[in-house]
Every structure is written in C-alpha cells, then in structure tokens.
Length: 119
Image (cartoon, rainbow, N blue to C red; front, side):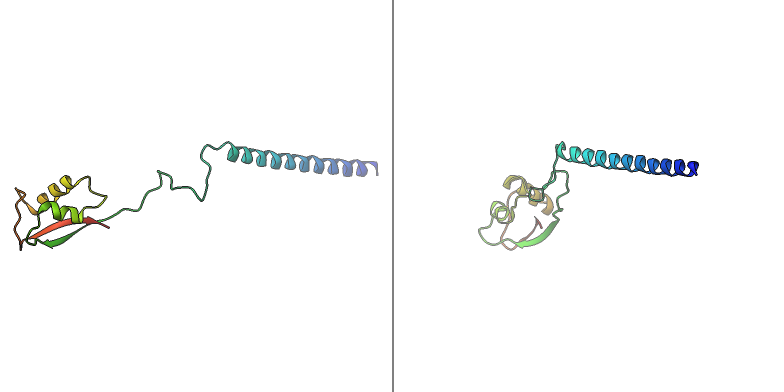
C-alpha cells in the first residue's frame, strides 16, 4: 500500500516538473520573439514606402512610326516623345538617329521615323 502511495506522489511530482519546464520554455520563447521584434533594425510598416530591394515592375520599350511634318526637326520630335526613361533630349536624338540609320540631323517632311517610348 505504501509503495502505491509513493508511486502516485512521484508521478504527480514528475507531472509538475514537466508542466513547470513547459511553462518556462513558453515564457522564454515569447520573450525571445518579443526581443527580436523590438530590437530589429528593419521593422515592417504597411504604410511606408517600398523597400529598395523589392523589385519594381518593369516598363517595356515600344516603337512607333512618326510621319515628319513640315517644320519638324529631330529636336521637336524628340521633345514630343521624350519621357523620364531617357537621359536627355540629346541622348534621345542620338537614339532616333541610330534606330533610323541617320548620319545627320537633316530630315524631310513626308519621311517616316521610328521612335521609341516606354509603357
């Protein structure tokens, strides 16, 4: 009878130690998680700007044909189709000349030029 009582007491004590250790592990885990979030140098905020390492959607380059009208110049055509993806009007004129195989800045009314643009 006495050994039964001793066995029951040991079983209860073993269960208490197990529950205490389980609670200790849970508390330490919550503290570690809380500290890691608190000490993080890159907190997440849904209302901030995009991070620089997240890819930005790619804009595609397209081409269209433009008829040269009387009084048009490469400069006026470049200014009309220039957007933020080109460095300057000069660079864009060089690109138009390269696309169309032009050696000079001379264009004539009625000619067609290919120009690039981004979307």
